[in-house]
Length: 257
Ligand code: MF3
Ligand code: CO
Ligand code: CO
Image 1 (spheres, helix red, strand yellow):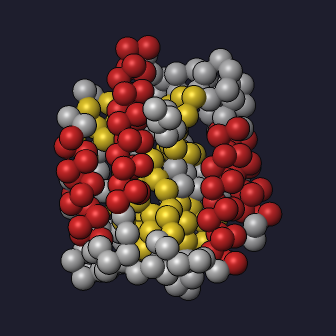
Image 2 (cartoon, helix red, strand yellow; image 1 turned 120 degrees about the vertical axis):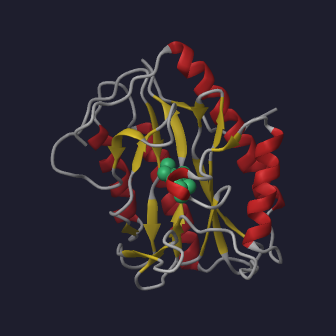
């Protein structure tokens, strides 16, 4: 948290707005197409096609050597799941899609967690609703004059309300020109207020909540997939937002047209 926050210029923000709008468009198109019976590799390939159609490219492919177009994380997988031919989605699964489009020197970052047809259990409903609510409440706290810690506190409060475990090893972040920029945006209150929010900051707010323990572990074979230690299920929702003089602008909001 030592590095200075990135404040984007109006020219950069124009480009970031576009990258984020395209990212949201791909997310929503992909969510519509993603269904039981597909392999996660097929989902990744489809994402690659949809991203290419925007004229941009995947912000994740080759990021620190990441091998996929997007991240596809199923059930107890928290984040960074890589599409696989032998992972066939089931109706009873929950799947999180995390993706970013890079175009013209700008990037977006967004994630959603979907159910695939079966009626979710009461616990899974609580998981999805709590994580979605935490993202909303975190965004509502992202007003200029507040601190990063106010976002963290708002997110953490919802986790407590819904009795969900908050992943601590991964955090939200600045975004815009690069996929990960300072500052960090933890989903739990840390010592110190963190930086103050000022117009021109673009933040990826991304609660990752678990039905059980907050503890997670990274797959030792693929080096990427993060899973819960107790194998209870996990959800992830993420928006890229712009801090303004007033309410934050949700740059990866769904298109209404
Ligand atoms: N999208 C992730 C995030 O929300 C980062 C993915 S990095 C990758 O911060 F290398 F796994 F793609
Ligand atoms: Co993301
Ligand atoms: Co992110």
